[in-house]
Length: 103
Ligand code: FES
Image 1 (cartoon, rainbow, N blue to C red):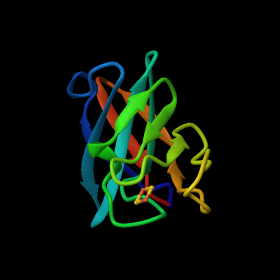
Image 2: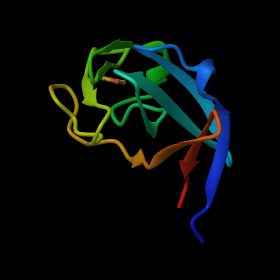
Image 3: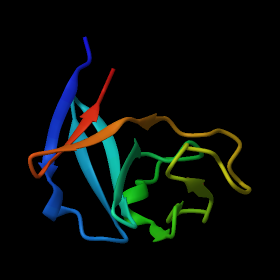
């Protein structure tokens, strides 16, 4: 099935900010950049750090532990020490709610 999960209200996500949430037992990070919302795995692919504790600059999230950066649009690892991309999830807005497709 499509498996869209209602996560939160759109106004719980301030622009240029990252929020950590749980969905179906998984740690997810939501980002609000220039009016668009993106979702990735919430934990860094390099070590056990939560990306919601990191620093969002434009479309890049910087991990709080060793400052690796991912592009939140496609999950790409942008610099050392990262060697592995992170998973992304489709997002849609519906009636003021944010839904994420967990697949
Ligand atoms: Fe994220 Fe090392 S744990 S860069």
